[in-house]
Image (cartoon, rainbow, N blue to C red; front, side, top):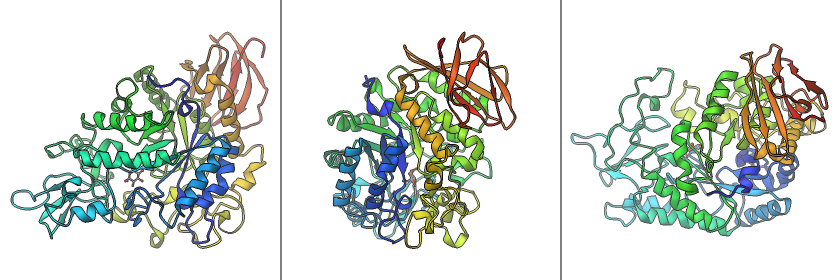
Length: 535
Ligand code: GLC
C-alpha cells in the first residue's frame, strides 16, 4: 500500500523546461543557475516540487531527450556543482526536485550505442534492438516512428537494422536484457544518492516490446489529418504485459530511498493506465493522466473523464491531472484565456496530484514560430500536421524588459509578443491576474485537507454547461462549480442542505460572498465555495 500522506499526494508539481526558464549567462538558453535564481518564485507560487525536463549531456537532436551520458550535466545547462547547489537551495525552501528519466532510448552518441554498432559480437550489441533485414530486404517489421518514417534504421557497416521509436538519433534500449535494466537502475541510484526526490519516466509504455516483434495491425479509425504513426494500432510496440515487472523493479529502486516519487508518462486511456500502478503499490506512484489535455473543454466530456478515473482507480491508486506540458499546445491556446482560468480552478480542486506547466500560471499562449526558426525535430520531419512543439516551449515571461527578463542574449526560441503585459512582474501584484488566481488556489488547496486528500463527490446539475462537485474530508466541505461556456448560468446547491461562502473565484471579485440554494455564474466563471451551516 502507498503511504496515505506521501508528499506527492498532497503536493503540486511544477514542470520546468530548462532551456526556456531562465538564462544566467546570456547564451539564449536557460540553465541551472537560472533555475536556481527562480526557485523562490516556485515556492512563492505555492508549488511543492519542481520537475526538470532533461539536463543531461545530449547532442540535442530532441532537445535533451537524446541522452549521451545519464550521470552528468550538459554544459549548456551548467555543471554538477550547479546541480548540487540547486538541490540544496530547493531543500532549504522546502521544494522537492524531480528529474526526467529517459530509459526507452539513448542518443546515438551514447558510448553504449557507439560500442553496440561497432560489430555484431560487441558486448553491447544486445543492449539495443538489432535485427536482420526482412527476407527480401527492407526493415524487419512494419513499425513506425513517432516522429515520422519507419522505426528502423539500417546500419550498413554491420548489415542490420536498429529500432528507434522516436528519431533515428534515439536508438531504443533492449529492456529484455538484464544488463540494460541494471545500468538504468544504477543511474537512478546515482541521482537518488544526490538527493533527488524521484523521477518522471519518459515514454514508459514503450520500454518492453513484443518479444517476436510482430507487425502492427492497421488502425481502422485513422484520419488523414493525423500523423502517419496513427495509421497503426500499437499493440506490439508498447504497453506489453511484461512491462509490469520492469516498473516493479524501478519501484523497488526508488523505495529503498524512502518517500520518493515514480511518475510515468503515457497517453494511454485510463483503463490501461490503471495497470501502471502495479500490484499493491508496487508500480508507479502514478502515471500522468492526460485526459484533460485530450478532452474538449465541455462540461459533459470533462466530467466523464474525471468520473471514469474516479470509478476505475482503487483505493491504493492515486489520481493525477495535467493541463499542459512541453509536448502539447498550451491550455490558454487550446481553450482561450478566459476558459483557462476556469480550467485552473478545475486542475487545482480535483482529487489527485496536479502538475503545472511553467508559464501556464500567467496565461502564456503558444507562440507562432516562423519556418526558418523551427527547432523541433517533430515539426521538421512532419510539416503540415500541426505537431510542432516549439510554440509551447518559448521563454518564460518574467518582466517587461528585453526578452521578457529571460536572457540578455538572443533567445533560442522567440519570446511571445504579448510579453510586455503578460509577465510575472505585471501580474504579481494585480489582484485580478491569472497568477494571483493560481497562487490563491494553490494556497487554498494546501491549507485544506478536503481539497488535497478529500473525497470527490459529483453534484448533479440541470444545465449542461456546468460541472459541479464537492471535495470533502471529515471536517470540511467545498463545492466547486465551473461554467464551461461564455454564457451565464445558475448552479443549484439544493440537496446539499448547506449554505456557503466563496473562498476563491476565477474573477477574484466574489470573495466572502455567501450563497444558499443557488450560485449565479457569469460566463467562464468558476467558484470554490466552502460549505457549512455557520459560514
Ligand atoms: C516524451 C517526451 C518528448 C520526447 C519523447 C522522446 O514523449 O515528453 O518530449 O520527444 O518522449 O523522448
